[in-house]
Amino acid sequence: MEKERVKHLISYNILYTPQENNFDAITQLASQICHAPISLITLVDEDKQWFKSNYGTSVQQTSRDISFCTHTIETDDGWMIVEDTTKDKRFKQNPLVTGHPYVKFYAGVSLCTKEGFRLGTLCVLDHKPRTLSQDQLNALTTLSQYAMTLIELQKRNKELEQLKDHLSIINSNLESFSYAVAHDIKAPFRIMNSYIQLLMRSAKPKLVNEEIEYLEFIQQNAVELSKYVKNLLHFTKATHVNIKKADQIPLNTFLQQILHLLQPDDTVNIQIPPNLPIIQSSEVALKQIFLNLISNAIKYRNVDESLIQIDFKEDNLFYYFTVKDNGIGISSDRLKSLFELFKKDEYQEESSGIGLHITRKLIRKMGGNIVIISNKGEGTTIDFKILKYLHSEEEA
Image (cartoon, rainbow, N blue to C red; front, side, top):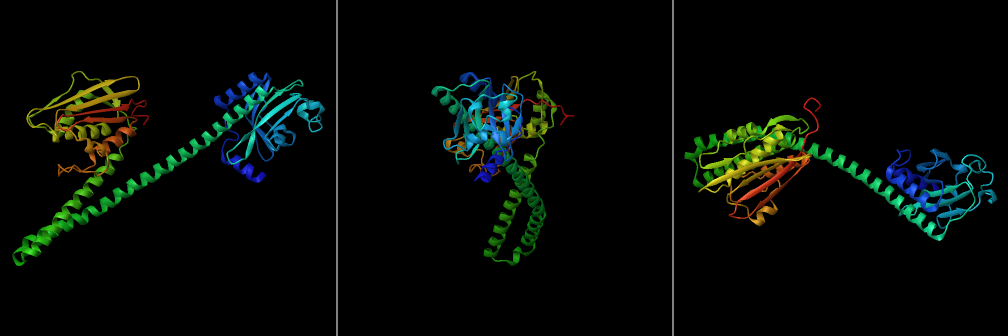
């Protein structure tokens, strides 16, 4: 049972960690409530007791064989009060009683896990014999439970961080794998499509209608598979963008370059505020985001009078962008699945179903989020924010 208890204690990865304000606040409060000069949060290891928090003393640990707390965690009810240590045969010759810090009074309550393992105690010490009132003992019990809750939360947070790191590695490996697969099968599909076209030209006069339909069906599916591979490559390239590289971006010049790449026709009125600032962000990521958002606004525009408005503001932490159009809008059903990967728009054959997924992924990697408000036939407003960069390009 003791081996299991120590093993359980070690699993929390709290032994010999730095002092923390949350735990120090507990020992300080325990001393104030119990009117005791010393208060400790102790963790009892195999051969010593170590103090996660030590209010009123600079001692960091003691040998377990002189530990009061060892007796506490071994009691039936998990708490112990020694009103006068000089009259208790267990402790009257203890070096902590006969020498510094001259403990004459001890009260401790075990730190107990939900599985029933007692890891250590919250205890108060005094230099003179005394006792605790029932209210003080109740308060000490409550504070010990709070200390155990903190320990449990820290363990869970560490486990979640480890899981997050593990999932991040898996996700990165999957993206790399998908890129490698898409890249490797790109050439065979191109060759297959070329041979089908050649066969269609040379053998078509010799084939019956049913055979021609089979070839056309194969050709159509080869084209669709090629598009899928192309989109998969685009997705993996876009999501591997290094957002930690900070560039100086003059927004007006940057947005004009985006429009030059998209080349909207004269029926599209795109309004950009003058005198936008120079911001510090990942140019390649922001370029991908605006290419997706503005191209969607053009694609789903109101054909009679198309208006796209771009706006910008900032505060101490974030850059805020808005892309607003008066286009055909998005139905409430479509809004629910808008960011799903490869979720194509049934009304747009050229839709790849990856643009908005990539956009949200990049924005989240940049510490922000995106909100889309739209109704069918009433246009769409897209608001997104990204964290301001704190590192220069050289530091990245």
